[in-house]
Structure formats: C-alpha cells, structure tokens
Length: 67
Image (cartoon, rainbow, N blue to C red; front, side):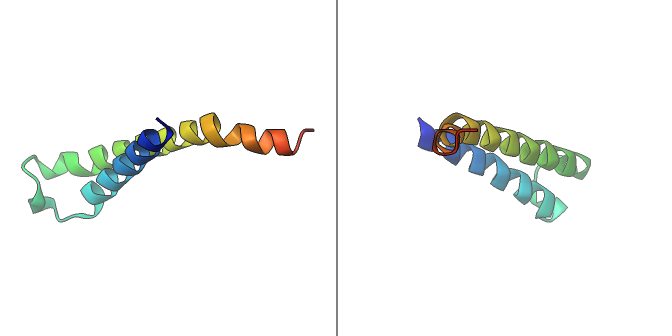
C-alpha cells in the first residue's frame, strides 16, 4: 500500500505540472481552467506526499532520535 500511495502522490504532482506547463491548446477544456486545476493537483499531490511521509517515514526518524 505504501508504494501505491507514493505513486499516486507523484502522479498528481506530475499531472498538475503538465497542466500548468503545457500549451493551452493541448486540452479539450477552456484554458482558463488549466492553470487553476494544475495548481490544485500540485497542492493535492504535495498534501498526499506529506501524509505518506508522516505515515511511513516519520516514525522511523522519531524512534532513532527520541527527545
């Protein structure tokens, strides 16, 4: 499940960057929606990546360095 969550986070980030960076004529919906949708996808991908990090990798760091 960990790898699926990592891949989905990267997929959302990639899709958002493509929507923001690609030429506006590349898509079948109005160009006024591509940049906001791309930004939303990038932010959502970052939130998912942060949640994956906290879920799977944060405990490892805290157990090595207890304060």
